[in-house]
Length: 382
Ligand SMILES: C[S@@+](CC[C@H](N)C(=O)[O-])C[C@H]1O[C@@H](n2cnc3c(N)ncnc32)[C@H](O)[C@@H]1O
Image (tube, rainbow, N blue to C red; front, side, top):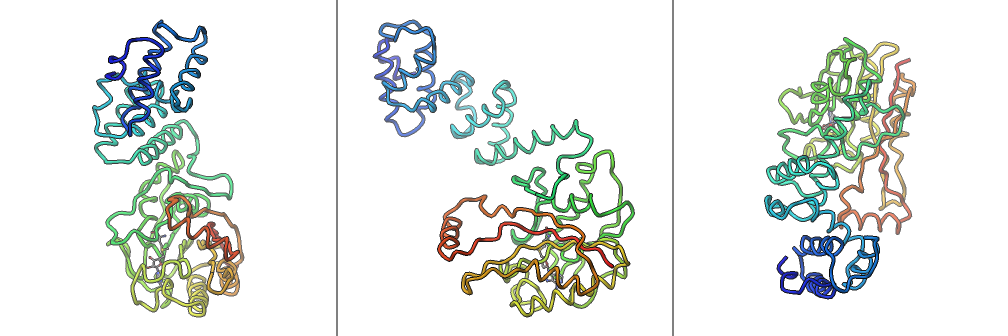
């Protein structure tokens, strides 16, 4: 409290010190918190005569020109962390603030998380996400059914609570939250079933299956999961082009997170004309017909098949292309009935970066809304 020591311990001295600190660029939050805590605790000349600490803090905030809410935060943090702890980790003030907010009653837990954040080089936001995930896991421990499994068809997994990671892939595209797989497997796959993901991409399906104890809990069972892809990104995924036929003779359940029309052009393969991501609308619709027929050939009556897709906003043509309706039409024509639909947000706004802001403006300008929902459409073979 250098600034405070230089002033006499009086109300006016504290206000003067606070004004000086307020004008510093950063690093002053700790000292401001210390001074404000001192002002309410220590009797001093000139302090407003109130027995209510809140009145004292309000007066202090007003006279020193500091936002009262911010001052309250500084006070809490300074009271929570002893000065010797404040520089212990090479982290920002926001890290310390977030850890204290997450564990206001446990300095030990807060320090543990700060240590972890430093080790993993997490930003304050990333640290909070990890804390939320960890808390969710703990809360899950006492439940009969995992909270990953949704009781309703509104699927919002933001942040993805169990963060199954895409491993060793060459690019960062294409994987969906593991929770989508977990929910589909839970609702549509029975013990011992043959389940196939013929567009397995990064292999998220396998990770979720391997971790099924987390979301199946005491109801854990095994089924026979097979993964294929035109451009596999993991060695345990077999290479197969779904346009040439279904990779197995039989499947009880098929899950397909198809390339989102035009959004992911060239991302899975730069120039493979059989990659749905690289197709124009006509080719894409033909491919849907071929794929739905191939799936149907591998299933018996009652077999289920889930397709995940959003619609597509075409700003050039000023229209939304209803890909999900095309999917329904193709699977109906192939021999399926629509059995169930769930709605999963793609969380497109979650980064909130400049690119997103530009797209938001473009959507409003063109009067064409961006599709944020992926429809999780499950069909049953007739
Ligand atoms: C949206 S990604 C799937 C991502 C996956 N759900 C995950 O979580 O990792 C779509 C996948 O479809 C694959 N694909 C595109 N055309 C295909 C085809 N004709 N046959 C098989 N797979 C194809 C792409 O290679 C890509 O990996």
